Length: 628
Image (cartoon, rainbow, N blue to C red; front, side):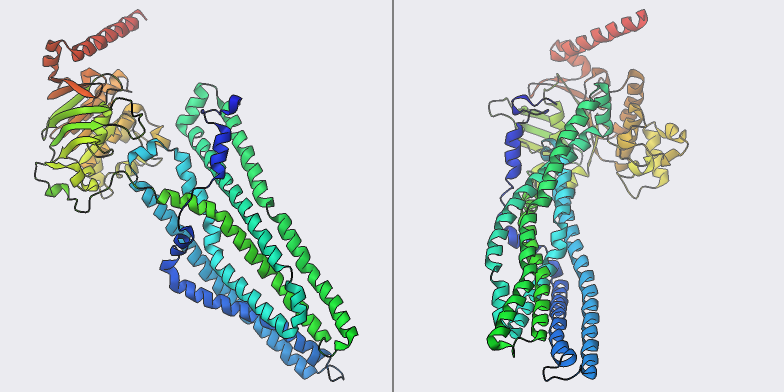
């Protein structure tokens, strides 16, 4: 794939993007916020900590018993043969400590897994809930794959830290401290030799951690891009697009490039710090050899009374136990530094403030003063958040009233602002100026959930889950009976089609409903809205993508659904709104004409021009079909 000039397939500056990837988001009080995640489980953590401390302390006792086994049992300092009774007691005691340590370890592991996975689950759920609360604009400007990566890859990336960090820090710290105390008690001179390199190792470890944290940020950004590419290209729509333009190899190449980058980063992440740990391991493993040498000098120097064989064996045994927990602490420190970038990315999303929120004193629609189903726009202005300042507003002073039970239609050229009007009605976007009034109250004074409960939406692009028809219908009302499902489908003119399927309402529709025709999907969507039974219905070019026959059938279903409801229709084909009570013609964000179909035709304005264009196009199409 060509990347000439440093610009990738989607116009992204590759070098600039990589630089951004390397810079993780800055989140204040990150450490305290991570600690706060554990607060609901503090009692379990306290019990876990107690078990960890006991387990670590118990694990240090057997090496101390080794000194007694050598000096009192195998090779008594006072001389003579091995003392078998003493040896038996010490060995039995050592085995008992091993058993106790194992039991404590099992309990500790269970509690650790329970708390760690619960915290991970809480974090994932909290992030998902927060994303659900974000406004529609957030999702229109953010790749789905990027959002999925934050929710899956980033949370999954920190799960190990959340699960093991507390016990690892506690257990290894207690083991290290207990081992150092035991070493001092055995021989303080040998202890000095064993720990002389620790300060240098700590300093080196910090530098390694910084490098790994940077690589972790780049790795997660790369995973995010891989997830995004997968989501875009392996969906049904993506596959159809790539096959239509014969771009399969290009998409494979795009995935291969990012996959190669991911492999490179994973290798760098795996290898970063390995040299450091290799040095640590060599140094720590070499300490016993040095101890033997120093002990030899001490014995030769006449200090053989204090440096016995038992002292040397016990000291090297304890020192050997120091290696793994010390490296464990260093690895935890590295993991914490590495995961800081992942936590920052998670909290960056959690810190996003939804653009649309309820006021503290917001009321339900049922408490609004006006009639339910009445919708009014009062001099509404709107500009999309990412629009250029010099660009004209999407809506500029739009005013109209839709009385309960009336059918109001919006027509006009593409880009005039018709669909935006429908988005503002249920407050999926916030008006920049003026007021949207629902049931006599400004929608900003109403609870958003109570407003959307009164509105049903049928859009041009019907979304169905990869599930059965029954499950897709019950998305609107989980408690709907089979009889209610059938009644809604009869009203939507789709029941006879469903009944003709081998599995009826248990037919799986496939991803996004691709096993159904466009007309069938639309009628199922209409039936779903009918199950909701809202007083207000919003129809966004619901038939524009259908053929003439399907359009007629779906239009009949829409007409049935609109009966008795306040209906706002955005239409491309004027034939679908001829019967509307009032038609508003929108152009450049303004309502330029209003009236019935006949009134607007008689006025000879924009509506009449649009009608003439569509009539001419229909005639041409008819003539071509006849000639064919």
